[in-house]
Structures are given as C-alpha cells and as structure tokens.
Amino acid sequence: QSVLTQPPSVSGAPGQRVTISCTGSSSNIGAAYDVHWYQQLPGTAPKVVVYNNNNRPSGVPDRFSGSNSGTSASLAITGLQAEDEADYYCQSYDSSLKGYVFGTGTRVTVL
Amino acid sequence: QVQLVESGGGLVKPGGSLRLSCAASDFSFSDYYMSWIRQAPGKGLEWVAYISSSGGGSTIFYADSVKGRFTISRDNAKSSLYLQMHSLRAEDTAVYYCARGYGNLPFEYWGQGTLVTVSS
Image (cartoon, rainbow over all chains, first blue to last red; front, side, top):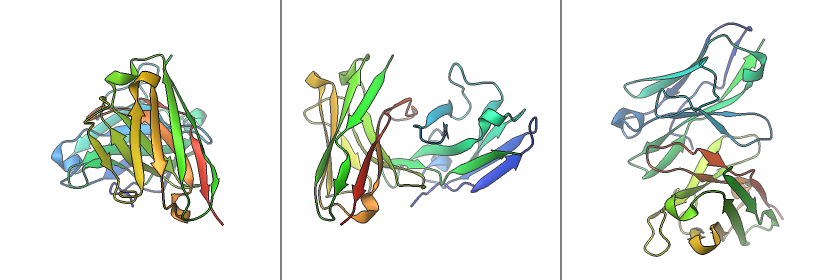
C-alpha cells in the first residue's frame, strides 16, 4: 500500500495549468527527504520530470515544476499540452519503513 | 547511453520460484546502488528492494511485502543485478523493473521491465 497519496485524476484544457498533490507524513516528506516526480506513458518505464523537489532533468520542458510544503509536495504543469497526457507518480524515502515509497499515481487528461 | 535490460520473467504457479536478471551497460555498475521496482497490471509503482554498490557486505533492504521471500543480489564483475523470488503469490504478479538510484537521488534510469505472472 502506498504511503504517499495523490488524486486519482486531474484534467485540463490545452494551455491550462494543472497541479498534482502528493500527501505524505512526518517520516517521509515531512522529514525533509527529497521528492521526485515521474511521468509514465502507456507501456513504458517511468521517466523523471522533477527531481530533488524542484529540479528538472535536461530535456524536460520548464512547464514542469515542483514544490514542497510541510508533509506535502506538488507538481505543476503549466501550458498543458496533449503530449503531457500520462500517469504521474511522486516518490520519496520513508525512515519508518526504511525504504522508498511511491505515490498512488495521478492520471492527467488533456481535454 | 546507460542501458538496463531485465530478463527471466514468465508464468509460474503459486508457491513457485523465479529468478530475474538485469544486465547493465555503459556505466560503472559497481559504483551504483540498484533497486527492483514492480508494477502490478493497471496499478501503481511499488519499490521492492535495493542493494548497495559493493558485492560483499552489501547494504540490502526489502519492502515488507517481499521480506523473507525475495533476495536481491549483484555480480559487479558481470554488471548484473538479480532478484530471486520464492513462495510466489498471485499478488506478486507485476512488471518488474530494475532501476539505478540511491538515497536522495531519483531512479534516473530504468529497464524496460519483465512480466512475472503468478497463476495456476
């Protein structure tokens, strides 16, 4: 069972801004362990879109941004494009479980 | 270009065993911690296990869901990662990915995954 909670789905029209929340606890995000965000297209392995809370790998558009506050994190996608339609997962480390944890996943739909 | 290629998946009966392999190339395998991560059909991602960079005396951790049944290991001379799975259950059915990453770093590189199906 996932210890990081995300909304099952979010949607927006092309060009709009959407945000995905990732709610954790005092043993993961709240303990200042970094949060990473992955994009997964159907039938493919996940790909990092934001790492260490608010950094983008080279090649990832600056439309993707991350932020943290307390025991939660968020991924924002501005200027939504059709190619952004995918599943997104947050990930961190949990000191109580002594292992990595993923969010429940959010499907982004471009209307 | 970093490559991770998993193999060994297949159909196995409940209670059976299977060994997955992950062949790494184009990076210094012995310098990196490695993990196995799985994804049940239509479900989310679940971290399974990680192993530190050294072979002997490695730091190893498992998710509670597989502790005592799965064993992660590596052969740095062969640039290979392994996952020995015993006492398999229907809920272990998933695509299994090997991935490179450790600590506060993300899982930057993933393989294409290998499907394990546990069914009678």
